[in-house]
Image (cartoon, rainbow, N blue to C red):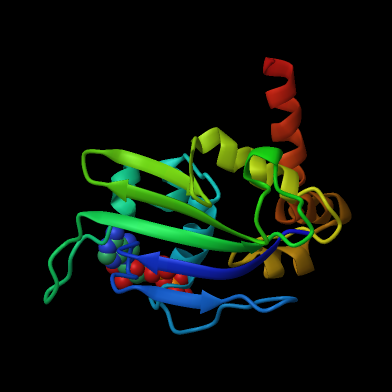
Length: 184
Ligand code: ATP
Ligand code: MG
């Protein structure tokens, strides 16, 4: 499938300084003390994948993802997140399918909204959302498991468990794809 290999953040929530994370094959866990930025990291992943609901980003407005300043640091003017994808299997949509590695970049500037790039090309939010909707439907798809979902999973009745697993495995991507088809 399309494997995520790196996540780069700059000015995104608590990640004010440029930060790069290598995403190894297999299961990745994020651990650390309260408030260290675990949830912010997951939000950065969702955000670069095209998340458009401020509520999903725990903010009042989309600009709230920009580093808001701290006692010793001024606020930032923009935030940027890059997700690097291994595309050697050439599973990306045709418009973006010309390279072994794809950089998906989302940037937001105060008062100027957000813009996306896939590789060297400008992209629309919808292009990026569809890219990941497609990528999330395979057996080896990338799945995001929220904090607390593991405990929910353990305690859940079978029907609930199925809903949680579907959500984590991105079956919702399938529904989004179908909705998109119905609109055409
Ligand atoms: P927990 O274990 O409690 O769930 P966590 O590791 O998930 O913690 P996060 O919720 O990711 O932690 O990070 C919270 C921190 O991020 C807080 O210190 C908060 O002030 C900071 N933060 C969130 N948004 C911004 C922003 N826009 N600018 C600066 N800091 C921010
Ligand atoms: Mg958290």
